[in-house]
Image (tube, rainbow, N blue to C red; front, side, top):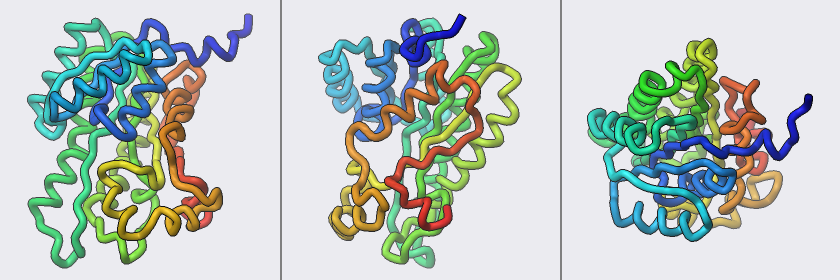
Length: 263
């Protein structure tokens, strides 16, 4: 008996943990998964931001809560996973969204800043994925992991974008996703990544101001940058039964930029 399309995308009874979920792309994904029926646990560093985000989600009828923590700190990350399991019983979906960038010419890039970017953008993904898999997904032989990469991890950047650590970290996320998908498929866990292009966010605010939104939009075949809805469908596909046979894939959501630059 065939399953209806609507039920394939239904996340009722599932729990989604979203890092860096208090704003920007993380909050957009939280809206998507929550509106599809998932219970949402948000985590980021600032309690005030999380309170505001959860209030926003609850106003949309979404069952949401929060835990303040620094995702780059191993002990805090593992505490988030344990507390989520204590409060909600399971974690079906992990969205590894927390990230940072640093702008500096490569020849002057501080090593401390390099380490900061790598710890949050790469190391924390491994810590969260390992903890969630150990404590929930592997024992239940079910899980969806969605890593947030970037088109910056698919190709080099124009010289105006001096973000060597960020680009390198997102390239690592791409292969981390593929390697983990290959290893954890036997446990019923899918691991995929979204690779956004330019979206308005706190992280891209300076770049958008420097280069101009119109200039960035003109570089995309669709002649636009991302908006507050453009990640929702892709995230829901990877999180739901509709994507149960998709793993190890990197989906660029970039208006076609990567298609014309050979990424």
